[in-house]
Image: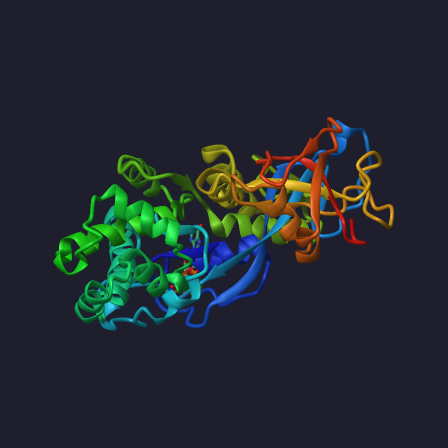
Length: 399
Ligand SMILES: Nc1nc2c(ncn2[C@@H]2O[C@H](COP(=O)(O)OP(=O)(O)OP(=O)(O)O)[C@@H](O)[C@H]2O)c(=O)[nH]1
Ligand SMILES: [Mg+2]
C-alpha cells in the first residue's frame, strides 16, 4: 500500500501512526525525501472464537478475537504540480510506489496548506484540487513512460505484426500493470489495436487514466480532521464521488504511543479510548487526550487511520484473509500451533494461489485443498472466501 499526496499533509504522520516507526515529521514541505517502508496491520475478525479454539498466531496477532494481519506500507515524498517536469522533488519517487496494489491519498482536509504544502490560514485552501493534482501528476508520469518511444514503437509493431497490448504491458510492467489489465482497458475504450500509431494523445491519456483507476485504486484519507475547518472540506471531497475516510493521524499516533506506555486502553480502530489512571497523567497529557476525545473520537467515531487501511484492502482490493492449516481437524500447523498464520490475498484468489503463497513447492505438487469448516474437498481453481480455513494437500512431503 502506498501513501501519497502533496507535501505537508501528514503522510509520514499517517505512516508513523500505522507502523509505530519513528520517522521525520515536520510542518514544512519535503520533510520526507527517501521513502519510509514499514508494516501496518489489517484488522479482521479472527476465526478462533467461532471455531472454539485458543490460537497461537505466528505471522500475525490476535487481540480479543481480532486478527491483525501484516501488510507492507510505503510513505513517499510529497508530490507537487509539475513534478512530471521535474518540479519539487520531481517524480522520481513515484518509483517507490510502483509496486503498490492500492494507494491511500492523504489530503489536508483542514485546508491549512497550499497546493505546494506551505502553511496558509486554516480553511483558506480547497483540498479537492489537491486530489486531482496528484492523480494528474501520476497520469502524466505513466503517460511519459508510454510516449517516450510511442511513434517508433508503434510503427515497428505495425510493420512486424507485433501486439500493442503486449508492448504496453511490457512498458508498464514495473507499475504492476499486467497484460490482462492493459487488454481490459484497451477493449473498454475501443482503441484500435491494429493501428496504434493512429491513437491520439487524448486517447493515450484516456488509456492511462483508466489504467490508473484499475491498477492503483485509491481512497482519500481526509487528514487533520481534528481541525474545525475540516468538516466542510470533507463534505466537498465526498461530493467528488471518491471514497473518503476522515482521519486524524496525529491523534492516532498519540493514542498508540499512549497505549504503548500503558497510559490508555486503546487498540487501533477503536471508536474510543480509556484513560487508565487519570492521576498519573501530566496536565499536558491530560489536555491532549481530552482534545483527542472531543475533536476526534466524539466527532468522528475514531481516528480513521485503521479504517483507511482496512478499507483500502477490503474495499478497494476486495482482499480476503485466509488461514492455512496442516491439520484440518485440530486447526494446527505441523508443530501443533493453532491457527498460526493469516494471509492477505487479493479477492478472487484460488486454493492454488494460497498454496503458492504458503510455499512454491506446495503449489507444484498441489492435489486438492480441504475446507476445515465443512471438510469438503476444494479443487485448485476453487475461489476462496474471506476467513476461510484451508488445508492444502499435496503429493510432496510438505503436504
Ligand atoms: N492537526 C493535525 N495536524 C497533523 C495531523 N497529521 C499531521 N499533522 C501535522 O502536519 C504536519 C506535516 O506532517 P508530516 O507527516 O510530516 O507530513 P508529510 O505529508 O509527510 O510531509 P512531507 O514529507 O513534507 O511531504 C506536521 O506538523 C504534523 O504534525 C493531524 O491529523 N492533525
Ligand atoms: Mg513525510
